[in-house]
Each structure stands twice: as C-alpha cells, then as structure tokens.
Length: 341
Image (cartoon, rainbow, N blue to C red):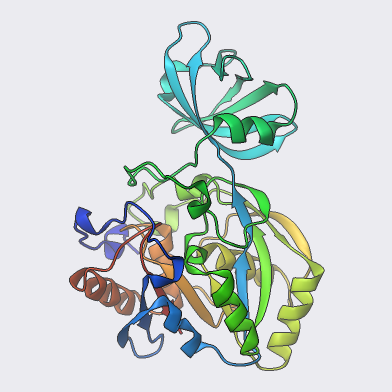
C-alpha cells in the first residue's frame, strides 16, 4: 500500500495546543467498526459502550521530563537533547537538535555540569548514544533540569506537567504520553469498575517511533523502531480469563494495542513477559487480542493512522476523520478521542 492512501487534510487550527481544564470533557467520536457509522458524543459517554465482564487495558507508562537544553562543552553552542531509551547502564539513545554539531567523543553539559552527556555512537536522523555522568539519582536530576517532551506540533508551554501524564501513570521510562489515556479521571475509572468492567495494566515505553515519520512510499518497506514493553502475570491471567469467558478486551490507545497484539502474535495465550517490540500494524493485520479501541486522532500518513485503519477499514477511518474535521474536533495529543467498537 502507498503512504498517500493514509493522508487527509487537516487545518492547523484544529491541532490542540493545550489540554482542556477537565480531562473527561473532551469530545468522543464513535466509529462503528463494522458499518462505518459515526456518532458525536462526549468522553464521559464512553461508559455506554462497556459491558460487565469487559476488560479495559491501560498503558501505565510514565513520561520522563526527558527534554534537556544544554551546551556543547567545547563551544557553548546550545543543543537540545531528547532522551528516548536506556540502552545499558548510563548509556541512552537520544535525539539531538541540531545533531550535526555532536560527533563521537564530544560532550554536552546540562545545568552547569549536573549532567554531562558524551557521545559514544552516531546514528541516523539525529540519533545518538550518549553516556551520562551525574551526581546522585538520574530521575532527580531530570526532575530538576528536564522539561516534558511535547511533540513538535505543540507550540505552547505546558503549565502543569501532570497534564501530560495519565492519572494511572506508574512505570517511568516513556518519551511521550499514551495520549488516549489522558481523558480518564479517577472518578470515571471508578464508575467503569462499578459497572463490572475490569481494569488491566500493561507497560509500553513510547520511544523513537513516535517521533519518526514514515519516509518510504510503500508502507511494506517501513521499519518500526523497537519499544520496551512489559506484562505482569496478574494482567495475563485476567486477559486469558476474559477471553475464555467470551468477554471483550478493550484497549486504551495504540500503545496498549501494540503490546497486546505483540504478546498474542508470539503466544497462543497471554503470558507474563517483557521485551522489545517493533510490531507494525496496518491493513491486513489479523487482530487476536483486541475487540475495541479507544484512541486519539493521529497525524496524516502516520503508522498510528494505519493501525486504526487496520482495526476497522481505511475508508471508514478516513471518513470518520473527515467528519471530525468538518465538526471541528481537536486533534493529536491534547485533542479529542474516538472509540472504535
């Protein structure tokens, strides 16, 4: 399939720059997975689509304040570093801007030397492996010096760092938020549980794949970047029981979906496991884990639009996006949501 088949027109004015005051007051577009019919709702209405015995799967990754502004030690030139994945020990995969200034052996200083990062490997498209030196605990230094790594299409500064975290964020290590989960409040999750819907948690730390556009014409040629995931025994048991009882698994976000489908692709049931996934889901993919999907609206020609298209059909999804544009929905990370079920 050609990348152009997943394009759509989006006015820049519809790209949400700030989160709403209340998480669950965002709009919700319901797309019927089988018929393509759409319905305009608000996120609080999502409980209409849940049934007792369903299991709602949420990604409990926690975003690191991993965007650092520092200086090249040799010239004092300013460089931005986005920390993505811990490779080993204090070695981290990062994105640098401007990357061309940093060669192997050269160093950056952050916070007057509170963190020193030395390049030990050069990768393509601005990627580097940097070895960090710091006093104390790295997370404390990041909390002190770092900013939330908001996507480049968000121009506004975020007043409250917690608004780029889900209310259930727990496992630190992500370079971006699992944005479908940003709409849930503690109260809404309690209401869901009181309906007899069970909550299950997986972890997928969002990494480089979120920031890299598809650069090939034929999507079959695209290679996904690997991201780290985990599933506990408790979650595996709950999901296996859900399927055995004939109930539905509803995934909150594309990250949860990729985790679930990775594990079911490699096993005949859910298992407690961890590892790295580069699963690429696009039309023609056979879903084995997910029966419903809650997600935000994604960038044109992105792998996330392809995943959503695989869960329904490309035409149904593009029609739904066209409806959302016409109805002035808010798009991307701080935007509105859709449920496909």
